[in-house]
Image (cartoon, rainbow, N blue to C red; front, side):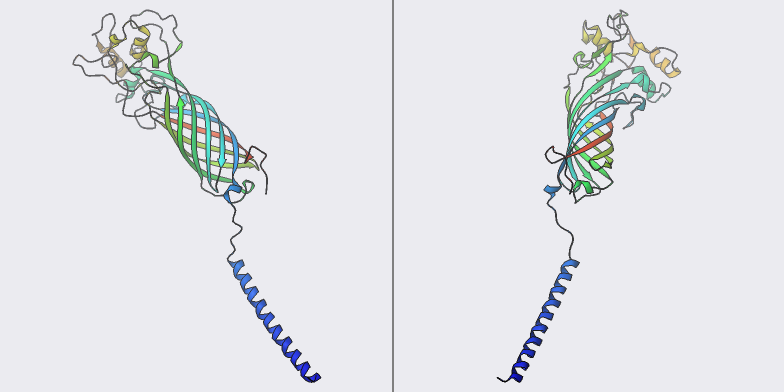
Length: 346
C-alpha cells in the first residue's frame, strides 16, 4: 500500500474513532445529568439514626373527679395543684417516632370546703355541705409512643430547632387516698389522733373495696425545643384517663352509718356534714337545718349520711364517671447515643 493510501486510511480511522468517542461522551453526560436530576440524597438506614436519651421532669398534678369544684367535665381547682417529679428514658427509632418509659411521683388533692361555691344553689352548696376532702400520693410507671410533627432523616445533631408532638400510651400506678381525722366523732367524743392523715381504703367509707393498683391511659401533646447539640427541653400537657373512680375515695352512695358498728373513725370519715358551720350562706344554712333523726345518739343532715326510710339511697358521688388526672410537664432530655455511650456526631 502506498504512502498516500496509508495516510488516507489513518485519517478515516481517526475521524471514526473521534466521532464514536464524542457520541459516547454525549451519552455519558446525558446519563449523568439524568441521574443528577433524579438524585434525592443518600438514603439512610433508620437504625443508624436511632439514639437514646435520659430525662428529668418537673410536673404539676391536677385532678378531676367527685370532689372537683363542679360537675362540669374537666373542672379542677388550680389552687390545689400539687407538684410531682419524674425520670424518663427515651428511645428514638425513626425520623419522627420515639418511645418513652417514665417513672413519676406526685400528689393530688381535693376539698369540697375549699373548692365548692356555697352560694350556688344548683350544685356548689350541696358539695360544700357534703364536706369531703382527700389527698392522694401517686407513683406511676408509663410507656408512651410519641410522634413529632417535623421529621428528621439525618443524625440527631441535625434535628429541628423545635417541633410539636403528640403522645399516647399506657400506665400503671399505685395510689392511696387519705383524709384528716376530725376533732370529734358523731357522738361528740374527741378523737385522740385528730388532725392525723389516715388511709381511707381500709375504712370502706361507702361499704366498698377497691384496688390501690390501677391502670390509666396517658395522652396529650407538647412542644420540644433544642437547647444544645445533646440537650432538649419540652413542655407537655396531658391527661391520665384512669379506670377507677376512687382516687378521692368517693364514687357511689352513702351507706347506713350503723353498718360501721363500733368503728367510730370509719363512721366519721364516711359522713362529715356535721362539721359544716352555720352562717356560711343562706342556702347552706337551709340545707343543714333540715335534719334526719333516724339514728340513735346523733342526727345527720337530711339527704346526707343515711339511707332513706323507703330504702332509696342518697348519692355521695357519681359512680358513672372515672377520675381523670391532668399533668403538666417540663422535661429536660440529655441525648446519650445508642448504647449509653456519648452520642457521636456525623
